Amino acid sequence: MKEERLFNVLKEFDFNLLNDPEFKEDSVREEVVLPIIKGLGYSAVKPYQVIRSRNLLHPFVSIGSKRRDVYITPDYLFEVNDKPAWILDAKSPSESITKSHHVEQAYSYAIHNEVRANYFSLCNGREFVLYNILYVKPLIQFPVQAIPLYWDNLKKILAPPNVFNLNSTKLAKDLGLHLQRLGFDKFDSLFFPDVPITQIGQLDSNMFSFSSSVKIEETSYVVTFDFDELVFNQLKGKIPQEGIEKLSVRDNNSRQVVYFGDAAYKVTIECQIGQQLEENNDEIFQPLVIKRIIS
Image (cartoon, rainbow, N blue to C red; front, side, top):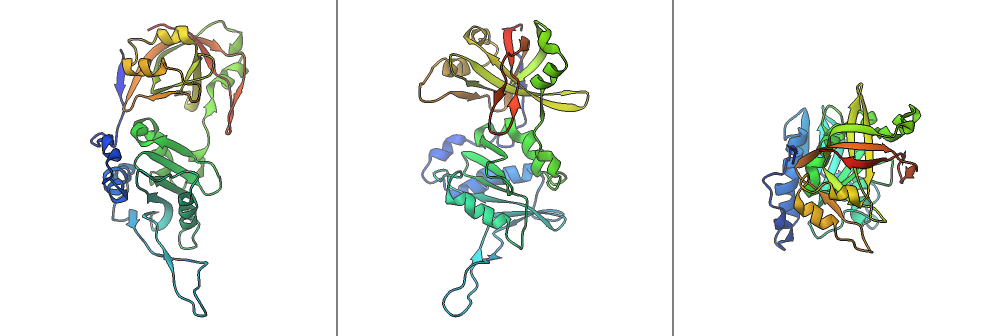
C-alpha cells in the first residue's frame, strides 16, 4: 500500500466530541473554527486580521415611531489590509448550515454596507460550506473530517494573498475532455502512474468513481476515473480495508462515499477515455474508464 500523508489542520481534534450534547457552538468555535482560521493565515493583528463579533447596524429595522438602532453580529469578520474579505458564522453540530435561515443570515452579513465581502461561510463542526455572494450554490462544501482533501482549495480561495483574486474560484479544466480533443480517445490504453486516491464514491449499476487533480505544463486539470466491480476488487490491499468493506455494501436509497482523511493512496492505472460525456450542475466532463490497477 503506497500511502502519502496529507496536511491536517485538525489532526489533534477528536470528532467523536461532536456527538456530545455539551459540545455546542462555543466549542465549535474554539476547537474546530479557530485552528482553521490560524491555518489559513489570519490572526488578531493586522494586516491579516480576524475580528470577532463586530456589531453591524441592521439596515432594515426601526421600532415604533422612533428609530432605535438594532445590530446584527457575524461571529468572524476577516480583513486583509483593513479591507473586509469574508465572514464566517459558527453553529452547533446539531444545526443545519445548508438550506436554512442560517445561510440567509450569513449572506446578510456579507452584503452589509459596512462589509461588502465576496464570500461567506458556515461551519457546525461536522460540515464546512463556502459561498460566493453571486451564486446560490456553494463554492465548496465538505465534511470537516475530510478537510485534508479540501485544504488546498480552501487556501486557494480564502488565504490572505488570494482572497481578492476572483480567478481563484474558476473550475479547473477537465482532463478527459482535454485528452479527447487531442485525439487520445483513439488510443486503447492510457497509463497514469502514482494517481492519488483520497476518496471513492459509489455510482449506480455497481460502478465506482473518484476524482483527482493533475498538472500538465503548468496547467491544472481535474480528472474523474470510473471503474467497475472487477477493478474495485483490484484495490484490495492498496486502500484501507475499512474502505473496501464500506463500499462493498449497496443501499438502494443512497450511495456510499469513503473519504480517507489525511492520507492519499497512490496507484498506477491503465485506462481509456470513456464513451459518454457526464454532466452535473457545474460542468460537463469526460470520465476516464479504468481497465486495471497495475500497482
